[in-house]
Length: 448
Image 1: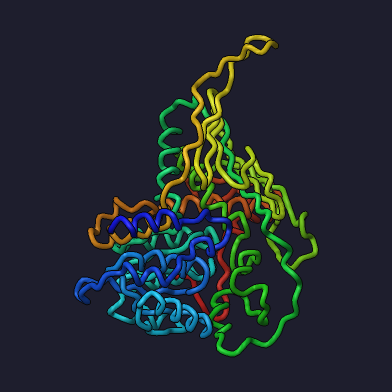
Image 2 (image 1 turned 45 degrees about the vertical axis):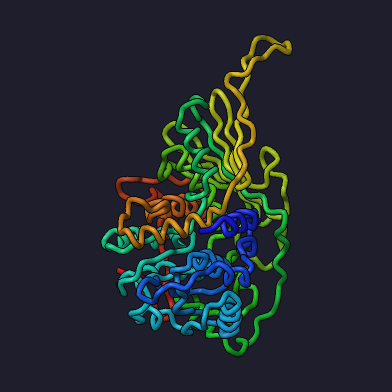
């Protein structure tokens, strides 16, 4: 990569503010530094789900000249046309089009696929892609239920394919540096970790009437294993995140990113118990279903993890609208997508002003580079080397973060403090165990 390209990529990396739009890259500029690669040396990708993060992931991959876009799959013809036009701006010729991902997976020329569909599709598409012999870059969260998470962990474990989960912060250098500091022990005993997402940009989802499916959309395929429903614009594209049929709200949308790093810092997996309180307090009468305000406490052996989210508010902890905090006896490390810092505790020596710090402060260590670009590059390197140990976000990382996030939603839905039996892989509550299951309809079946 020449200096001009390196500098441009660094300078054009934007802070991610809750939508895939922050990762959008000027496609015309890709054409200026994509080099011609022999077909024998190209790695062919197929994208399943071409909106939002699906296309952002693809854009990141095609910054690497050896990646060739062989196929696009989406249920919406207008999306296929738009994304093809975007690729043509980058000098990439029109790929094959599919509306049914299974047809794309039959294409022997495709080496790996990107799964960028809504959450309720991830389990089926990952399992089918592995069965077809494809490597997979799968968007987070791993799945839309705890049962699917376990199935996906097992399916990947029985495969020799490369699977990276799109928790790209695992490749962001300042996140890695922050966790190395946490693991150094300098903070002292950490008894509480916090993760939060306060999303002031989120407005009410307006109530709109059902209507007939617009031309060019295979809505039945979009629904897939989800319950049969009339077409409603609110449940389609971006806002699917706020409906239980397809996703888990902010708890799984932002939670998997931030809770992942809380777990990483604390070297933790599933908790002993979970309780959650919240509801639709900001916009009680809008069309969304998932809670816009939620506080969740996860109990571990020697620490607690607190998750908070709220829409319509930016005033989060430590003056940050999102982040992770590791609160130790000597100091607190606060981390978000902009950087990390350490705030020392002070020694109590009476009620005067003489309170010396227990450790040295660490000034803000700012973000550098694009975590997404480093994440896709890491995946491609492993696709070529086949050294699965080098993946930055393998299936276990996606599994742990998604399981804990879904546990928060299960606790919210039951309204109880629920207890997890790690040996049995079940809650001690029958009601909670029913909620953790996946429900497939319309003739679709869970992968076995």
